[in-house]
Length: 199
Image (cartoon, rainbow, N blue to C red; front, side, top):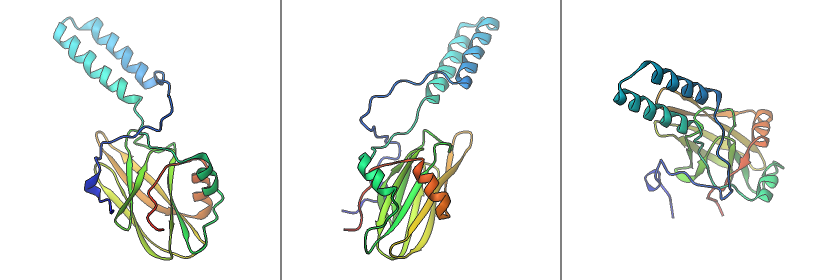
């Protein structure tokens, strides 16, 4: 069954099944708390106080939001990091480093028009593909970017997901990187479960 872009909800966020602790306040979140105290001190209007508190509380809570995706078994992750394609195939790695922007945004990846999986910060996808020309596309809520690759049997190819975070939007970028950079990026990430498109 072919999965198209319209068949998944762009705001859906999966959970990897592990229990996680709620993160503490960041310095920026603490600053918002200080601002709240400031406005409470110098504004006497009750309605104004309520509006300020509601807005700042929502911002603080969103600071701890990070997109999650189902992680692959650790054995799959270790095998992928050997960087040895199976006979008759090439490896295409699509990774997104932890330091990237848009932590709350899940980027959806397609290969040759078929859905592979979602990538959060600190994750990567591996697709074992036959030789030939393949199109890889990354989608955010605001835009898409794509790369066409001509791949050869027994070779590794690396694509990095980046992006620019504006006031209310995250615009995704996708680019091919050299093997040394790609290996380092993949080694720093964890593999996520992706759809196997080629038997």
